[in-house]
Length: 267
Length: 358
Image (cartoon, rainbow over all chains, first blue to last red; front, side, top):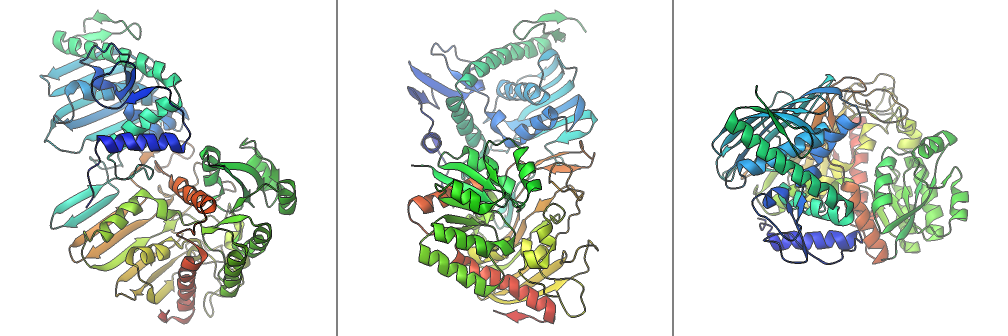
């Protein structure tokens, strides 16, 4: 049996990576908890949605470290799939790990990251804090659907799909003719079916969200220029989230004129 | 730690390009030179703009770069012995491709050279550094499946012979021209010679050695190559665990001279899938999945785009650690000898039609 990796393990692993790759860090960093004065606070961006931090937190777009999203982004950037027209996103999660806002924050960012564009309009239909369906358009004219739900049972593995349809080709993180993600290892024993998906040997034993957190923190410490970029994207995502809930409330499409302001337009 | 000054030899092995990124990014390695077998291979390498000097004369490279401490021996199997001699003379540490030699006398010569010169020699069996394999090892050693009855595995790929023609040359791949079996117009040195991983893996997982092996070659999938591309292997380990392996080149390929996008015809160009049956249950694993998928350029075919290939990071970390800290690699010549003997036993079995005891 394996011990569950905790916060201390995550911090130690980041330190080990920094040492291995000779990355010098000036000052203190933290990966969890409320921001402390003078300490670089490296946490997934959605952790900073509710707080009004005075200490300049560094919102991490951790999912951008996940290799399936990196490859999808490359497939579009390298014109393997040409002239993308439609982007279909779906993500179901459990409320013990995700809120509607946090999951929307993640998927809105992935929409722009993989789609290589900025959202210029959105229309949202929202049921309480459980479900949101969005129709979104990027500034490169890709039309996108984003379906999110927080109604998976507690402790469930997040189920997501990201599929881009172009005039030449389709790219997806789900294999054709399937509805759920594959795992790399399945065991069928008296304990039932247990699955494992291990993708990172340097961080073996951590779950994928922990790996993304460590990798994203490592990346901003390695490339400090990324801090500004991600802080700006965080501000942008906060505006988008506000627009999503406003659209849902008013039952209106919202056109966003720039990255940080938006105007309303009745359907 | 002082970075190890390293070079790549020959550039004729299909794995050569896997090292380029690792050698650039690992701060404990300083990539100083490359030797290429031909001008054509040199030109392909130079197009990558790596900023590393490339020589077509290995001797000249060694003379120009006396600082070289280690090499990745990315060459045809028949080149290994001479390269071992050159490296042992210069006390240069070796990371050797999958099969140092099928000739066990040559193999012994290599072992003696390594021992006498005191260099580190690690064999490139990257599956040991694959995270899925690490999970399988953990589950098996943790007794999650109870006593194991069978370990079956595929190690199937497309055929690399069009890009790396030495793999279609019995002399260059197997070391000599030996007919596969009486009356067969094919020779040893094909897909079996390319796929030692599963033979190595089962020894590592079971802590046991081969008892007997039976192998049978089917008709070739590619009619125009002179080495085997289609075979199955079964047998038992000394501790009673049975196995069935498929080490074929059973995924068709476009006949590219330089590997790249669109090489595969079947969507997934390489697969190592493992199934283990034990008294407590069954394990199924895909060592290179899940991935992402597309049907875009260049051929509009449904294609698996792999999402992880970081085995080379862990492998090079171990190589560095062994050189700097005077350690013996896990996959050394002595350990690997019985894997090569098992592969030779497969060829003997194909020739005789009988089980071969080891």
